Amino acid sequence: MSADHLAAEYALGVLDADERDRARGRTDRDLAFARQVADWEDRLAPLAAEVAPVRPAARVWPRIERALRPAAARLTRQLTIWRGLAAASLVMAVALAAIPRPPPPTLAALVASQTDEAVVVASLDRARGELILTTVAIRAPDGRSAELWLIPEGGTPASLGVIGQAQRRLSFEGRPVLAEAVGGVLAISLEPKGGSPTGAPTGPVVATGGFV
Amino acid sequence: MTADFDRAFLTRALSRVAQRDAAALKELYDRTSAKLFGVTLRILHDRQEAEDVLQEVYLSVWDKAARFDETRASPITWLVAIARNRAIDRLRSRQSKPVRAPIEAAEAVVDPQPLAESLLEGSEAARKLAGCLDQLEPKQAEAVRTAFFEGVTYDALAKAMGVPLGTMKSWIRRSLMSLRGCIES
Image 1 (cartoon, each protein chain N blue to C red):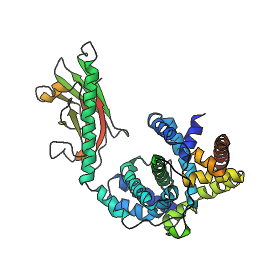
Image 2: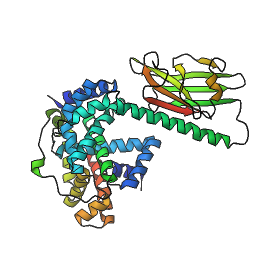
Image 3: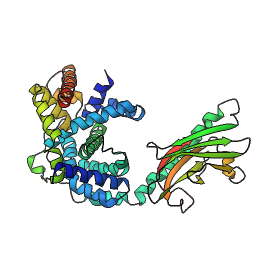
Image 4: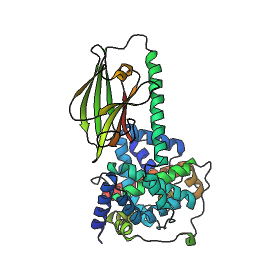
């Protein structure tokens, strides 16, 4: 069956749960397929003209509004993400430990968000003891700053500073946490202007990456 | 209000939502929630679940508004696609789903929100799609409509219409390809 048939069936909604999951997974990996799905959604959506509108109960909007506030629900979601990252860094460390030879002296990490609003290449030069950060793209929303974090294996996020346009060199001496960078995870979060006021990430995570 | 104006209004609201403007999300909600609730309720046949999904839909819009591309999609069809996808995901996550009777007329408190309406009912795209559906075999057009409105699987659709699964698959695939040809002609 062609990709276009599958895109059409996914958009119409006739696939069963497993087929649907697989098709959705493909939209994440295959840009052309994602575009075909979007085109089919656009072709079929006008059928909604034939669906009678129904007023939702008055309680629905207040629930949405509550969920938008940086309240308990949101915090929990962020904490879950950060816990997930800590777990991911552990998995990566285990995977690296299984490699028999020592890793090369220079390692690179690409930290890129899905929509390219923040793309940073981090190059770890262990011989010279420094991390070189090169910003490829940065478009933080107004009033926000994109902040880079290093989460060492099993550790808590340590700030590597707000991401700017210029290339930066961070020395291991100045940032002892960098000695633990291999096996860790780099992440970019959106923070209040100037960076997280608490020293720990508070905003949404827009990108992650590890050294390879 | 004209459809062009309405489309521009929703597009503008979405771009403000992308900038984390909660008031813009409320404007969007006020103008589109009855249509999207109609869509989710039709698929789920359960007010409670449809309300939960509606909430997810607008939170998803809050997160994804920056990805809306006005050059590729109209705002109302983008919103409808999100609502249908969420509702169908919820439907699939149920253990088993009997195809239920359509919602009682009394349950559907119709609340026409002129803005969403003018963008869909009055739209060239909706007229064209309806015209193209009319060109299909009546049974096949009914299968496409039922699939869209109820969000059911091929299997459920085949059972509901009393035809073999293979027949239903070929009906739908052929119908979709004909529709595309007709829409793009």
